[in-house]
Image 1 (cartoon, rainbow, N blue to C red):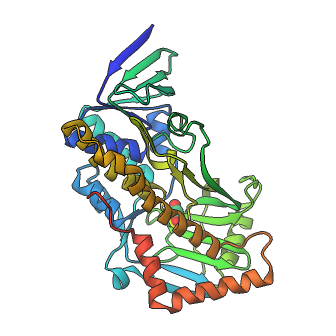
Image 2 (cartoon, rainbow, N blue to C red):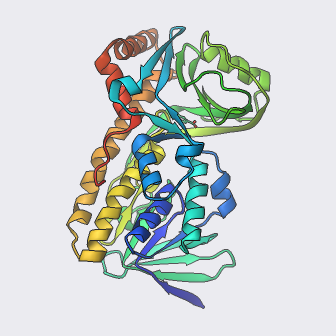
Length: 394
Ligand code: PHB
């Protein structure tokens, strides 16, 4: 027995992209169903990045999606770039008059889920999308299976694949589940959570002969830190002492406040852009459409930028029967996606030490870092990109 349901927009994936889109569509009077193979608990507890662009914060706040982002989040007006044993502040406020917010992605997800459920959103956890059909018709369908093994057919006017890097919807749009442009990196991040006070007022991105480290934060008592590592590293193979020694060496002269480490993970790096973002009445957004390496924290922010554009395009399509914004969606979204791809790749390559780096490569890299911090134009480019370019479609 297949349970059939109808909606205007079927959204696969209850991550930031899918949930925010359902919220903005609902504000415009457009119903949707959101499904995700994961449980609510898994979505709300998986640790992700923590930096929101100013435009992301404005949308979450103004749309009523999260009223905690401004009260529980912390505004940061700059970052420190560290290399050759010295710190250099990039002063966002002075350079571009903008800032970023430290507010972990899983907190954004908790807010979005609570907001959507309170508004009566049809939000289904533990439901796995298997297939998207009728892509080039006016009634595309999502065939899915719930946790008990029952088949569900969602009959919609539009389907959105917001289902992350292992997207099921991608095959319906690009013709293959892997179809896209991509690049792998010969390193990964070893991430930890530690119970300790902050080691610095702002984030530190550090390049050293030992590799890259990022000193981020979570709260007054919990800190998030990352260390460049081999992608094959077993996170449990290092003792706490070894981890702290490696972190201290990688920040090269800045003393880190140590504490017990209570969480460890290895984050693999990848740059990816799907060959196509739209086919007929199915669109890809967020990690289903693109993945960036985490240096610069563009992942969720880029997902929000996709949502802003697609929301406008779907309102025109479904409320006014006007498909022009939808037709323009891929090209418009891709302009920002490739700028963010470049920025994430650039921050990554400028700060990490590739395993096969020669002396020439190392010294050139220091020259590059100096070029950026000693030039107001260099610092301003970094500040513009990090705090986020203006959002098209707002
Ligand atoms: C984090 O806090 O998890 C974080 C911050 C900045 C990044 C990446 C991750 O560039």
